[in-house]
Each structure stands twice: as C-alpha cells, then as structure tokens.
Amino acid sequence: MEKNPLRICMLSSEAVPFAKTGGLADVASALSTSLARGGHDVRLFLPLYQRVQEAGFPFERVEALTDIEVTAGSRSYVFTAFQSRLPRSETSAYLLHCNDLYGRDGLYTSDDDEHLRFGLFTRAVLECCQRMEFAPDVFHLNDWHTALLPLYLKGPYAWDELFASSKTLLTIHNIGYQGLFPIEAVADLGLDDVRKHLYQEDVADGVLSFLKTGILYADLLSTVSETYALEIQTETFGMGLHELLAGRSGSLVGIVNGVDYDEWSPEKDEKIPFHFSRDDLTGKEQNKRALLDDLRLPFDRDVPVMGVVSRMATQKGFDLMFEVLPRILAERDLRLCVLGSGEERYERFFQWLASEFPTKVGYDTAFNDRLAHMIEAGSDLFLMPSRYEPCGLNQMYSLRYGTVPIVRKTGGLADTVTQFDPETGEGTGFVFEDYSPEGLRWALELALSLWPNREAWARLVQNGMSRDFSWDHQAERYVKVYRELVES
Ligand code: ADP
Image (cartoon, rainbow, N blue to C red; front, side, top):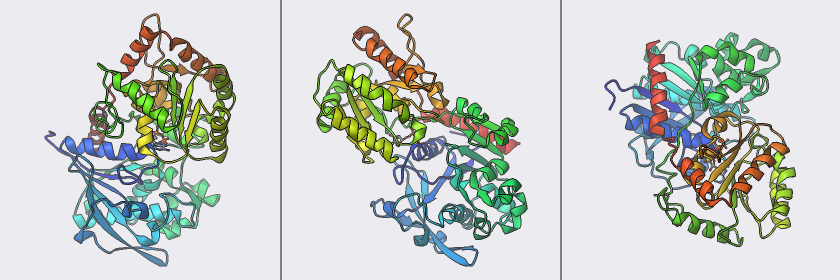
C-alpha cells in the first residue's frame, strides 16, 4: 500500500464493462482498478450512454451530483452522476447522465453536437469534482474527447483554488482521431474568453482541434508504447501533429498498456468453455474444436487456425490481406476465423472470402466479446499486420493464450512481440517490417512452415505464454509519472 496515496481523476469516453468500442475501454478500467488496488483514490468518469443505461448495470444516483447545470452558448444541459463499481474492485465509476447528449444510439456519432457531447462532459466532471470537494492531484485525460480539460482549467475554472495544484496528463491512445470541429464550437463550449490560447493557425482556418489543444496545454503527454511515442514525432505517423509533439518531446512518455489478466487468462476466462494453462494445453485444442464448430468450419488437429479480431479500419492493415489471403488460402490448408466490423470494403472482402472458401473461412461482423475470447483461446495464430498500432491489446492477449501473433513491427506491436528464431528458440511471434503484401506473405509463410515442427512450435507457444504484461506492473510506471508531475 502507498504511504502517500494520490488522488486521480480519470476521464474516458469508454470503460469496460460499461461501454467499449476498442482498447481504450480496457485500459481506462484496468488502469483505474490497478491504481485503486495500490491504495490511490481513483475516480473514473464516463458518459452514461443510452445503451449502457439499458444494459442493466447496478447504478446508484449520487445525491450531491444531481441536476448539475452546464451552460453552453444559449443552451443549458443538465447532468446527473450515477455511481457504480468497477468489476472485482472498490473503484468508483461515475457515469454522467444527460439525456439531451447521450440519449441516442452508439457511443460516438457524427451529429452536429458531437463537440458538446464530450466538451461538456469534461466540464461536467469539473463541476462534479467541485461538488465532491475532490481536488485531484492529477487529471488523467484520454484521447481527444477529454483533451479540453487543461484549457478549461486555464480559463473558466482558473478561479477555483480547489484545482490550484492539480496537474494534467493527456494520454494519446490513437493520434488518428483528433476531434476536429468548426471554430463556432468554441463559443458553444464556453471557451470564448480563452480563444487566444487556441492554436492560431487552426483558428484562422476555422478549425477547433480538441487533441491539439490538449497537446498544447496538458502538463504531460503520454502514449501507449515507447515506439509509438517516437513514431508520432515523425511525419509518417504524426497525422499532422508531429512538429507540435516533437516540440514537446521532453514532456512525452511512452508506457505500454497492461493486460487485465482477470479478464484475459486461459486458466479462469469465463467466456471460454475449456480452461488451460502453460502446463496443460489440452483445453486449447478443445477450444479450437468449439471455435470451429461455432463458425461451422471442419476441425482437424493438424490444420492451423488463424484468428483476427479487429475494428475494420485502414489502420489495421487489411489492405495487405486483399492480395495475400486469397492466395495463401488457395495454396494451404488453413482455417481463418475473423471477427469485426467497420469500413464496408473490408467487411465485403471477408464476406467474399468466406463464400469463396466456405470450409476454411468463418466471418462474424458482430461486436461479440465471447467470440473474441474464443478466437484468442481456440486459434493457433493471430494476425495483426497494422499500418500503425499505438499499443494493441490483442497481440498481448494472444501471447497469454498460446496463440502466436503475426505482427508488423510498429508501435506497441514492436514493443511486445519478438521474432522467433528456431536456432536459439528465443522469440514470441513473427514480425515483419515492410508494410507490403510481400512483407506479410513472408511472415505468414514463415509461421506456416514452422507449424509442422511440433517441438519448435511448443517452445514458441511457451515463450509467449510466459510473458507478463500485467497492469500492476504498468500502473507503477504511471504512478511514477504522476509523482514526478505532482512534484514538478
Ligand atoms: P483498438 O483499440 O485500436 O481497436 P486494440 O487491440 O487496442 O485495438 O483493442 C481492441 C479491443 O477491442 C480488444 O479488446 C478486442 O478484443 C476488442 N474488439 C475489437 N473488435 C471486436 C469485436 N467485433 N467484438 C469483440 N471485441 C472486439
């Protein structure tokens, strides 16, 4: 237990088990839980989306945080906080209800008031802190959605002594999403008085960038792997923000995400039918059979199963698969189990692949947590050829489930998977460098040609399963960073 516990206010647009579209949800929840386990006072805030409200989680309305009015331009919005607990933890999650903003389908929208849905959420969190008289040592912000908070502290909330010593850390989980809005949003968000602090070139261009504002004013920046921290300072990966980030390189750290092994461990995973461990992999083969049954594909112990679980976005490297997968499926005996939805051209590709190779390829477009766990547990290989990958979680889940990752050497993939060398028996997966169909094909061929060598394969599986990316370890790195911030 910590001698000097910290007060952390964590803001995120998603957190498991309530709302999830990607890795951010896993991270926000698991990091909060881990910090709280270490004795810190962590309060996690997220919006109470309609679908979360309907999902039947146990919530309690917080009397002191009821009917909080936040004014935006000529309109007022009323927020009420509902408190819940994170699973297997005493950590408080505060879900902010505001029907006008969150009473619609989905977590994210392309509606005209998207800037208000997250900008005002950020303000509402500050209002909650005031009412709870909670003076965070650190506001931990995640992605563009909450990146305006440092500017709110500098502007409309600068008067409040409660926040006088609070520091801000902005974690960039994916620089591809920046929260860009027409400049009129500034008035809506109550930021007219601090307009001069905005990035003036953007203002001249009529744009408000949430993320850029956060990058300018957060006390410290972090991202979710060491390699990605370097990559985003380059033109190739910086999505237009590389110069700004390079200018703040002294205040930018990379910390690889941890894995929530309570959720993702083959020994106790509640979403898979057969448990297994490093010492006894019998259950893995049973899961393989169950997975293939689920997707109506024939089981054969000697035929490798390759899994994909992913948002179907360009970032994830699907373009490389267009050329490589049809050929490899035609040439090789292989099963491919794919789960994910997103851009239509990718969905159509996998639908086509499943119809072209009906005994080899299964595809499900649902968001299906159980199937995601099944694919990790039942596959032999996991494919993640990302164009860029800030951290990536699935490759780390794969390692724990004895499912060998095939990844491109970028971002967190480069930091967590190492190339297997059959000579030395070292390494945990297959890593290709060049973002090209040839690169992917090289890695796939290497993996498939090692597969029949049972001894080498078993060694590779053991190497992966013994890697430890637990949050307790990674959370310590955040604590160190928080302390440096507080003492600065
Ligand atoms: P990103 O955050 O860029 O989407 P990550 O690898 O960091 O990528 O995290 C993705 C998370 O979302 C993983 O936990 C993965 O299992 C989950 N996921 C993605 N698509 C689906 C889906 N269709 N069904 C269930 N889980 C999914």
